[in-house]
Amino acid sequence: MHGPHKWRHRFRAHVSRWTVPREVILDLLSRTSKHISAKEIYASLYRMYPGIGLTTVYRTLDLLVRMGLINKRTFGDGPSRYEFKSEKKNEHHHHFLCTKCGRIIDYSDFIDEELELVKKTEETLAKKHNFKVLDHNIEFYGLCEKCQ
Amino acid sequence: MHGPHKWRHRFRAHVSRWTVPREVILDLLSRTSKHISAKEIYASLYRMYPGIGLTTVYRTLDLLVRMGLINKRTFGDGPSRYEFKSEKKNEHHHHFLCTKCGRIIDYSDFIDEELELVKKTEETLAKKHNFKVLDHNIEFYGLCEKCQ
DNA sequence: TTGTTAATGAAAATGATTTTCATTTCCATT
DNA sequence: AATGGAAATGAAAATCATTTTCATTAACAA
Ligand SMILES: [Mn+2]
Ligand SMILES: [Mn+2]
Ligand SMILES: [Zn+2]
Ligand SMILES: [Zn+2]
Image (cartoon, rainbow over all chains, first blue to last red; front, side):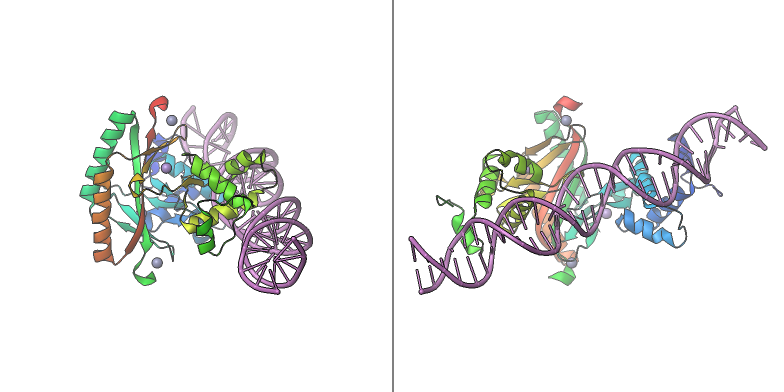
């Protein structure tokens, strides 16, 4: 692979090689704010990189999740969707899902109260049930502007 | 089908027939507090009702979800899981998922604060983004007592 | 430049769920 | 109680997402 890239050192630290499919997939994900599926990634890259197989897309996504660079989400039915994890700690967000058109909308309103609640709940779960909370997922369902 | 049942009238209202598979599946779900998959339901019923096919289990579960009698949940990987919806309004609960052993635990601590937050978030989403919020899902991930 | 080993791609396998279609069952109406 | 027609069912096949297998290719340390 040619030019270095800002993520290259993280791959090395992870004892993983820096390859064309990995660079290209990570690049695509970092450039979009959407939640995209493996097949959509495969299709997006097909014109420019017809050599990259769907299997490699899946394997790369799995690696990127393990490396903590992206998030994998399974919204009910349909394929898993992936989104790039922002470097900035404060860009944490939750989702609203339109049950009619399938639109997925990020939101971060009330994030302060939500994070406080999350913290409180984590403490209670830890104390009362002896759970070690590592992550959470909060989502709302309903009808988006266009669909009601 | 023999004896009437407390759900029979709801099926009639839904223009659906009261059949053996439907009664038996609803009965099983109402008796367990677990989150069970279609295949688990199929296997549970097999001894007593070997005639009930997996296809019918799926179709019945779909109907029961549409009727609002049960909830369907897709926790990341694996099959969808179903749980009976309690009649009592105040038995609403959220989930904690152990990422190591897969255990799913219901909890309802902090439900007051959570419900208040949910209400506030719903209002904001409605006002600011014009969404009609109909439902929500809150879950925590981590390690259960046995797995840490 | 080269050797080792990880990464890749195509095809096959897997697992969950859905569709198809011929047969059976429910149940409103005789 | 009998019956006709629509709804429900079960078995098998189809579909869809994802994983595994295995032979080939490419990355990169030496
Ligand atoms: Mn998002
Ligand atoms: Mn539950
Ligand atoms: Zn919509
Ligand atoms: Zn556990």
